[in-house]
Length: 284
Ligand code: ADP
Image: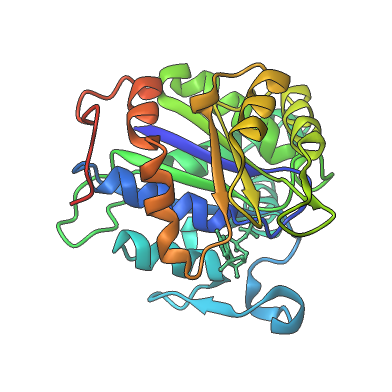
């Protein structure tokens, strides 16, 4: 099983969900079975009790699970059917650990965020990643995990810690992180300057938490200039092909093509050492 973690920095709402689903779709075009999970760090057990004006539309899964709209995007992009278990929230994972504690599963132990909660997150992710989600009931090869919120948020901390542990548990070649950041244009408009500082801060925040992004996705209102991409690469000490530019498009269904044009698949194939990904893939 390979894991692609899609995390975010600077601000939420930068397009993590669309980038996560689009990456999954590209991987699916190579014949891999792709599944998807979303981690929402809020305390609610699920999105069902949240106001749509605050949280956005609630998406209802086939099993009745009331979840974030990103699960709806991924069902559509990947052609899969997800369950309520594919969405972890802080409320859900705490409830799970507290129920186990009451049952006596940890008898004699002091139950702590590390390792008990972080282990429970990893176990949950590994278990749910293996659930077949497509029509042919095949066990997935790749699990795309979208982590809501931004790295550095207090609510995010146990999940980030769990992801650093998961990376070690499954091995570096089986875990890849795409960190999504925002590149503002100041002043707004074609003459404005594309500012990379928020992205530099976002990458350094992630590294401080123990996660070193393999790919940096920069969301910008307008297409990123070559100089901006090179600057992000230089300042974050990665290769230019590890920087992905995602500008505003007329429909989010264009985002997979945007990623494909930047040769995301061969880059992921190299990082994952996946032979099934051709060097110069074309969408099928
Ligand atoms: P996040 O997961 O980071 O909160 P989403 O993926 O839910 O962000 O995207 C937030 C909003 O931005 C959604 O309405 C989505 O349709 C829109 N969006 C995302 N990426 C793009 C893009 N490249 N161009 C235009 N709109 C986008």
